[in-house]
Length: 233
Ligand SMILES: *Cc1c(COP(=O)(O)O)cnc(C)c1O
Image (spheres, helix red, strand yellow):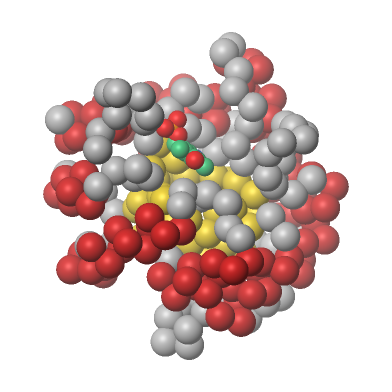
């Protein structure tokens, strides 16, 4: 079941890459396992997946512990909001954080990253649709923060992440993705050497890939809808 859904998602990614004249290897699938049990992650690992995204710090840490036997085969990504009082836990447990939205968070992660682990891989989350309610750095603040984060010792700035406002038609979906890509290109023109554009979810992965996504974060297209009576336990 999970293997079939994963196959379908990989087929969607491959088709989107073909339409965009991009090599299929240029897009990585991040399997979003929030709200799912360790068994679902195990099934996805058995089907060949190695990168998993979690939204909630404690849930993620518990799952990482439950899957300790697979630790060397899994890259764990935090994609949800990160409060200051949780940075130590995250620095000790995760491999990536996509949701850095202030310099202070990156500084704490760098200070708290244990010396025996490789640098924590970071993306800056950008509030690309400019919605008041969503987290993420204002686009105008990104350049300054990016240079400061890139200078920290125990983290490595890899790129940008966004969760655009949902839109139904492809052109409206592409607009915020394009804005994020332009910001990404502007940072690279300043020598930051970023390689990760973390955009695209179940509903808009084609639009994101058309605009240069390198990592798509997919949950419901693999595991079904979350919440409500039909949600997996
Ligand atoms: C849940 C979530 C996703 C996956 O969304 P789907 O629509 O289920 O694919 C991606 N990114 C973030 C930050 C999420 O919280």
